[in-house]
Image (tube, rainbow, N blue to C red):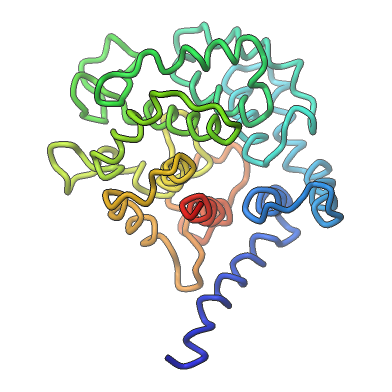
Length: 301
């Protein structure tokens, strides 16, 4: 093999990393530094990125969502802050938590509760009495196959087409919650049963038709996400953190994710629900690329 061929993948990876570390997207830069590169928050470059993030227009737009006093805006604002790598110690969110918790009692908000718990764990609220209680009880409704039933009991079918109204969307929010819990040292026995569901179905394929996707949009690169629309990069991230992504049954899903990579080693955004700015559909995307790299990182641990 020629020396040029040998060094091309290294150069490509460095180019992608430098792209993620550009100043124009402080939220991506900060998350890349602190999670992908494991840089200390005390390092001067990290502090610089942190200060740039907190003073950015993106943060201002996210915080403005809380001022609207609307349930779904509260939920998406918390997702955004968690995605940026911030915690309750970095930005004031305590005043909104009780309001959001009350919203979870509304019928049309219940599907978002597990993803909310995931984000609250990321934001540093695990020891909050309500959060801890809900986390401990959250996996009690898991079924034998590792899935969770659609919460709308009036529905006769859903787009997951899993047995007895199993909901792939809802189950994946549990996967993301489990991953964040593991990262803080909290592991429940049900995690293995949850992992087994994804392994048994090659991550995203129908149990009775292994060539057909369970939900097509969840096999693509969707970002930013909500409780019903999540991209494949998020599922692979969750499985990687939980130590399951090296199973041979994940290979087809890895190939799907790899197919989203362009010639420069950057991953392309398929679809979006842009409650914060992430880039254009059909173009290389820093968030998708960051999650793909994070998935690879955790996969190797």
